[in-house]
Length: 364
Length: 247
Image (tube, rainbow over all chains, first blue to last red; front, side, top):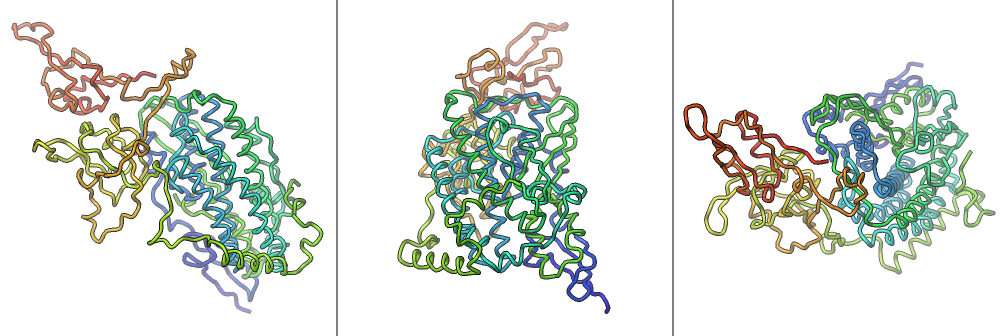
């Protein structure tokens, strides 16, 4: 039988963003796959070289619309390391709260996309409904729903408003009750399970070799989380578990993300309790110098999608000489060649959906 | 393997054994609930969501408060702010910011770094227009009539030296501490910095006489009035002025 090349994307409903997956199909079975990216290239890294250090923070938000808090966090972190600034405890815990809110709303956005991938529009609507509460928290904290622009070099933009703790804990409590509706739609549905279980199995060794990071990697059984293994922002002083699943299939990666949302709720509660113990006069922002001393630095944080890293080369002026972004999805997409090999065409959305694609940070 | 939530199913016994009946039941229950009670969504053009005062919509401007120091122009990441000559209430031309909202990314930096809080963030997010020219907001169009205190963004920073000394309650900002410094030998006394200073913080004084017996004029900075806008630094033809940072 003759093979056929099928081009999925850039406008295909399963591709969350502009990218193409070319597959060579023998009947229903995928023989070979070729991801094509670059439709969203905006020259982000080059643009940064023309801007002073504070100006890049709102641009870092635009790397990924649903992980804006962690992207500006990793940028601020690398500049702080280059300047040698140590944050105060209050600023650190505020960043933890902001990051975990960002993680929950990003995973909910993924769940929404996952629902439509599998043809379940109810999940899409319900997860977006839950997500609104966390976007409202973002508005109260920093004034914008998605492009938050909250971390600053040397701290955070503003201290939290006086009503934020109450609202945040309410939203978290409510979320932990309401998510069972979503879980009932997915975990207790035989249709969902039959499409996810045993699909797209990646072994532990392969996951490490492909360079997968984040929930995708933890769903394959690799027990690694930057928050625990390379702690930043006092994550080592909070008690939480890294969600790991040894199944390695699409359902395993789904379970890891759902479990991470529960863990994020715990982290938010603990960080809020820690913030309560710190006096409000504690500084949240220190004045950063304009120039960064000469040298090369890197910093990494745990993005909702994986391990995001920025590498900074500074030449002593007030603009970066080079800023390299290591995007988790760029690496995960590269692995799609091996992920979809030998599966049926109908399983591709289920496999690629669990990667949680974001093409803004991939092409940058 | 650390997946705890599966053990926390509300009714653990029946879970995963009911084929698709559980999701069907949950959707049905939700359908009745939202039909009888208030729906989750709102009718957008007729009713709108409440937004807090610190919502970062388009920038707004208090025309009378503004100094014309162009810090907003310098800090804008997308370079969407231009300083334009604009007549004030007495008819005199003053420098005021004009924002191209087609390029604005609503980052709020202009409001954050404004030394007198003349720039504010407004809750206005419905900015659609028929032409691109309409999106260029002049200083008068930027005004927001119902401005409250919550729309101002205050820059509150601590100095690292203060923290090291144990004083944590002292708040400051770069426009309160960073000041220009003159390198006397480079200065040619051209008085351009005096003309460009938006707050009239620079005066020329006679520092002595040169070899030919003519007076040497040097600028003198009034640190109380200065807002660290760096206009004199940019204007100086001989690079005699630098900003001294306090950290």
